[in-house]
Length: 139
Image 1 (cartoon, rainbow, N blue to C red):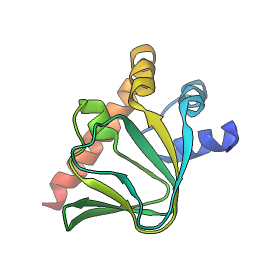
Image 2 (tube, rainbow, N blue to C red):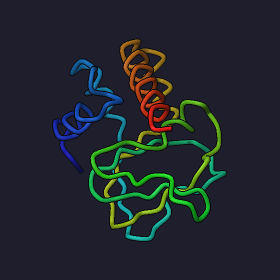
Image 3 (tube, one colour):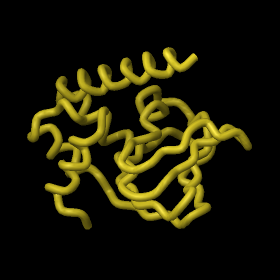
């Protein structure tokens, strides 16, 4: 199991969590569980419930809509948060392009943190707005 300090450092490096105070990062870090997947493994499929988001610690993950590659996620990065935040099914598949180490945050834990930590709500909103703007500028 990764030490709490290492989890906090990882969270701080991600746009979704970068502006949070140490106390908030520690609360998030305490909720994370570890998972490993081999190359070619499926993390989730389109239509699956959005019950967790993932923080990629090592490896590469392809996000695919059927056979079409949408994006390749490389460590360190998070993915799967949109289905969690919208409480909707997954819109694409997540397949490991190489063996991966992940940290998983369950939707119920994230919702609990969002309800009690306004700074987390604010930081996630800012990060998602930046992402939407970035995607819009690519078109």
